[in-house]
Image (cartoon, rainbow over all chains, first blue to last red):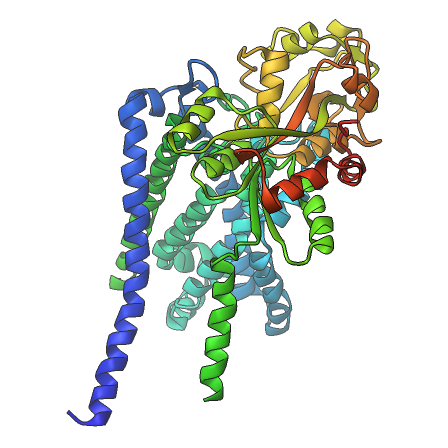
Length: 291
Length: 269
């Protein structure tokens, strides 16, 4: 084998190894969380953890029900989508259909900067500014609650939804739009009857990526959701999503105790939820490509 | 060749942190004790440049389990070690030795606009367990009480749990926050809130309540009239000797105790 060829083979092998790294890391994470999480389900019981509504991990006797946390995670995520989806899709539509080039160049960097702000800063602003404001505005006992967390997360996912939507909008063939205008359609008709139906798959996958970001976000919900373990019976209830529970307790839980394994169990539930979302969004992306 | 040398140097620098020299002291644990250990370590290293001290946080439970596993020389703890942990340590061949380095009072704080200014332990327990829900039951304004607590794994919560809750279950809608500062800023912005924080964190933005007729202070903790007080501990494997002993003696010395006071905790003398 010539020297050049050998070099090629070695390079190919090294590059192949780099692609194995993420696979290996993923496998290790899944294995670790699965094996330790299952210990919790075995020790405490699947039903007691998933459907239990009392969470007193350090009391005697302890109880480890995380049903309210699962519901809180889902509610916070749902709320964030209700804020983030209209804002994200709206800003993408404005940028790609309405704005002239100068406005677009002016606005787009701001949306991108929004996505680079660390979540701890959003949390901080939530505690000192947005939370107290919401408390005064709605005249409720505390501003650290489901609504505040959803609102802030909604802002956080705007750039994700906006940039994916914008990408999708740019794939709409100009001929389709022109056909719509030729038939006498207004701009609004074109958006609702042509552009949105054409990009439906991409919009759904943008939505699901937003959901994935919301459900996995930790710092913000730890700081502004309030951390109470009760069932969220109002949009102003303080709540405690799955991620916040792990972050608040993992650092100070003795290794090897039931409490420690239950935190792994919570991580397993979270992993299951996010994997499910990834699979669904991959499905939509694939469909989109086939169209 | 130059590149090669740089590479080797980089490696050596990186790995010199991984393989500690014998002069190094490592400690981890309570975030409450952390500021004392950190400050004391800085001053001590200035005086003894050959000794290198690494201080990490993690929480009391983490510090103690690190000590049991032999990963650190000193565990910082804001609660007394549990019998279970002493037993675990013995099984691992670690003979736990306790040194009290400072005292602290858990101050009960409310919003400055709250007219209530004192409370007794029983009422406090009733508030945290949800039996009392409105400030007017305590002679305050007609306003629901927002119960703010630390997350259940913190050493601070464990002290509160033992001295106030007496292991009763706190109400389900209590806000469980992750740090003293989070409690401080929440109480500051919430007129109906009640919370507890270390004495060192109390400032003019919140109002500390008298508990059983006594304000939290250096005097009331040292003469044991303030009821929700605690000690801060260092745990070592056996009676501290050598550099570790020197460092702990430094914290207990007049200079070390002055650091304790500066940070806002209560010195032993």
